[in-house]
Length: 386
Image (cartoon, rainbow, N blue to C red):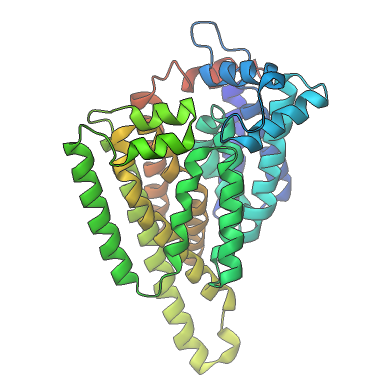
């Protein structure tokens, strides 16, 4: 039943994804379906394939009364769990409410704010990110806060930078790794060529040192003393072999596609400017805003390259670049909209988007993680649909 509902919702969004006008009814139905898909993942999984993350969250939630607010860096999540206990919510209801609130915020404050067509974004989200988000509650909450904070990077100012950093600190209180997003504030740098050189040099140097240092990041001991959190310590002291190449390939593919979309928008904007000189009524201010956002998202992805050395230490850090995907989808939608309907070029561009998403799906949920662990039970053992 879950698979049938999944493909039915995918089909509905596919119908409206590439049109100039979205379907509000389909958007509402899709959001309800996503809430049920993510909210229903975990509790009914068989013992052999039980969601480890779900089980760990449940145990921690049920024992939260014995946890002090300052016992670990995730103070925001601890407070949230204590609130759930105070309201006498069992873990299933608590998780479902949190997922619902985050998804509504994502839609209202991110997707609807930027996208001309929410069906496009929802379609892409359901093809892959929805499935992995069902496993990682803290990351999902922190990602919601992070994506909302992007609005403060749209215009460069001291106040906006402070607001962005405050939001990042709030996200960090749910997932410590999000502290690394503070470096994204440099996406405002005017000298982009110098920024690119610094990123390239820093990444190469840190990657080389990490490999030569037995896959350990320099000064990691100092960081561990500051963090004092077992889970984060595990991330920072674990080692991978060649598995780190998978997230590197995935992020590089995203960068290429965002760059392609950015170029499409740049050409459209130049044409728009030329036409506006002849007829002021043809000036499209919204296109200029889309170009600016595309530039910002592109450079956020470029700065994400600096996280590559962390992948060598622990592949779990790939979430740092995976969290850019919804922003990338928004830029893809801008570019797709600007291309003439029915053209081969537009078909190839959209097909490339789906192809790269399938690459993320296969590498993350079939190669890095066995399909029996997350992908299969997500559809076959959902609490609501099976």
